[in-house]
Image 1: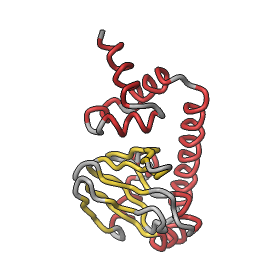
Image 2 (image 1 turned 120 degrees about the horizontal axis):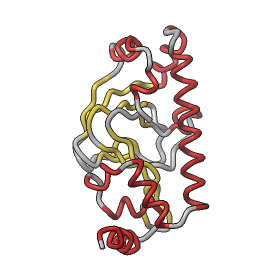
Image 3 (image 1 turned 180 degrees about the vertical axis):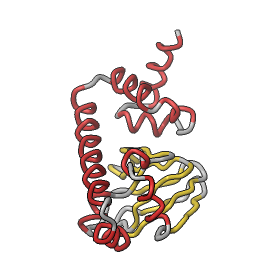
Length: 183
């Protein structure tokens, strides 16, 4: 989800920026931990963040966010319930963060925030449905091809094990699929 796509109004980001905190996370740093309630929404200026959960001793990657995108544990952020997800910077990452209280203030005091909120929630829902559909209805090959058409730059920025986990396959299967493409 691109921040520029959602902000639309060039003044909106500037109005929010005055209330946001600029944060930097080094590669490998956990930003939000499973079991906690995310209290910040991040707009990524530079870097890549992975979101994962743990199941049966394994880390399952479920989302990547990069420059220009917005990242938060959306379910927990809005419900106040502890999250099952951990977010981690994969590169040095620079973000602007907005707390849930600051976001509520913005919804109450900046007229264009309603439109932003509606577009953000709609896009998050569509992304979730598309992700679900890809996992239940696409082959490993099709999921890889979709990833390459939507996020080709991440293949050079994210360890292959994380990409394989995100695509719901083993690293060996991903390597075989990639090998077919270059052969």
